Image 1 (tube, helix red, strand yellow):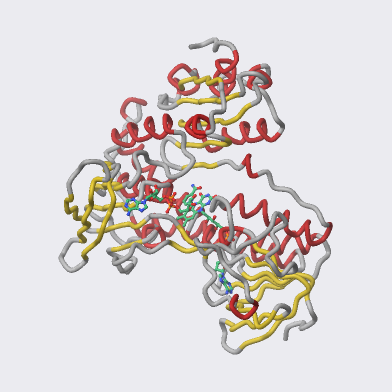
Image 2: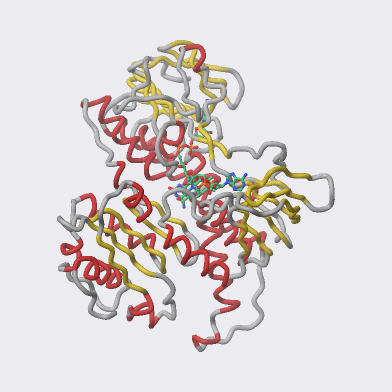
Length: 471
Ligand code: FAD
Ligand code: NAD
């Protein structure tokens, strides 16, 4: 039987936002309960998002490398075969290990984990429909809505997760499709297109905008990335809007229209992946019972301290404003608990890195060149190509570049953009630099080990205010 005393904090949702807040609250000595209906903790990210997709990206890259990139390295391999069932098992074991690990961490920090669907009865009480049957109620001094997001459906195309799939179907296909159409060339579209293309699927990405990568990616970097993806066999239809779909035949059909001076046409494939964005998920939460309103995009409205209009009910993560990223949710989860416990907390929204885990990786932090231009902010730009970096050369991995943008007067960094091997790890240095208000000269005068890819980072900084040595 549960301890039914009122909690200091009741969290609805055990995703990255919810479970991190639960651990932090436990560490702060608060009594805390976290309600999650999925059956496992970790939310979208651990169960069907970040973690399983990265397993598939890593292992499909290995497979593709072994198939196509060993000869020039002096390695001869025999018969290379994909075992898709075991490939998926490797993914599942990463997921299970991590979700179980999170459950252990909640226990270790004294946070109660309630398996069920939570719904507000009133401003002070939640009813939970328990996964095992029956229900319980729980009272709290504070509440945190951390219910996350779901894939935005494409109107008129019914998702069956077999032929018409979201990312959830895309990480669990039972056979390699012969062809795939991807609606949306954002991060999900490109990561999943990469996985299946490497395993042998003919993939075409249809994107409404004139560039790939979704919002935030620097246009120069997006163009360079698209070129590399084309070499890998991906096909693109940019400036093309999917109008409707038809699943009645053997193949799934999409009617598309060029947004700029083109004509309507019909595309078809064995599988269609819809990756047109995600929307906040608050269904069944009983917000109507407490009079909480959502904005026009379904986001829970909050102030700068994550409070809804009912001050002891707060919201963080994908369910509210800001980029839908796990590390953003995690930062907010820590900050919101600090606000509740201490009255202050902090997240620097100008300094949240983005990483696309394709090959090569694309990573950035701060503003893009087009962002700066559109605001008439002057900038210096410095670039350095990996083709001039010794480690990239020894690795036979020279595609890509580092690009830095800095204030011409103060040299303070405004944005950093990387396409290349290990960009996702390298951006941590850029994020730290920007968080500390570094100039490009600060980075350029910091000794970087040789031979490392990070030297390209240093040399791009040199090129931003002065000149690179090796290019
Ligand atoms: P969620 O993770 O969605 O968690 C919310 C949880 O609340 C869910 O488990 C849900 O079951 C539960 N819930 C909802 N309503 C109730 C209720 N009434 N009662 C009980 N429980 C409820 N981000 C990155 O930073 N890096 C990546 O590499 C990355 N890859 C991704 C790949 C894919 C395919 C997808 C789909 C997303 C990816 N993301 C990535 C985004 C990331 O998953 C989200 O930003 C993150 O999960 C948001 O965390 P959250 O806790 O706000 O929400
Ligand atoms: P997104 O917003 O990044 O991209 C969606 C794309 O679909 C946009 O480029 C949009 O122009 C296009 N689009 C919309 N309607 C269209 C139509 N009718 N026809 C053609 N194109 C259309 O969304 P996403 O890729 O679905 O990702 C959802 C969220 O998940 C994002 O916030 C993303 O940051 C997050 N995520 C992050 C990672 C990561 O950090 N590596 C990985 C996966 C997902």
